[in-house]
Length: 148
Image 1 (spheres, helix red, strand yellow):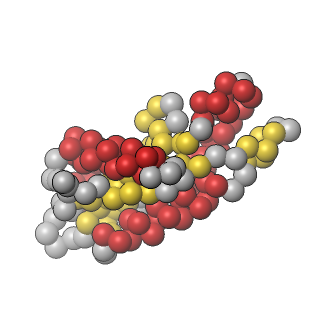
Image 2: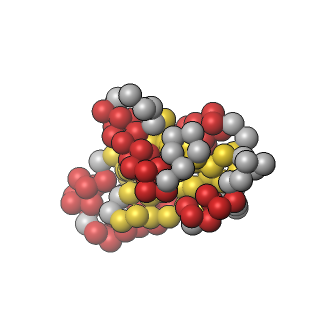
């Protein structure tokens, strides 16, 4: 899907963004409440992510508690931040899973094509780096990749 987004991002078209999302505190929840509840939580997160983006965008689970979102055809770089902020807010609302009320947050890293890189693997790496910057800044937030 990233390669398709790159192919569509001609000079006449708009930007696209990669959001790398990691759930804060998922492992303790999974360990404490069990894998069945953990799986339900991941499914709930995926559903909420789908509601936060447009039909033309792509949500994917990488594995574990990591997700990516491709935001296609952005008008401005800041638009990716608006969506990431909506996602952070949406995921902070409690999940009702069986008899458990589960609260979780997410750290999100953002890279932008072609500003940060024109290479797909590098965009993934940069979004991952930005996600760790968000985690280190206090979790439950988003951060754009910034070249040092």
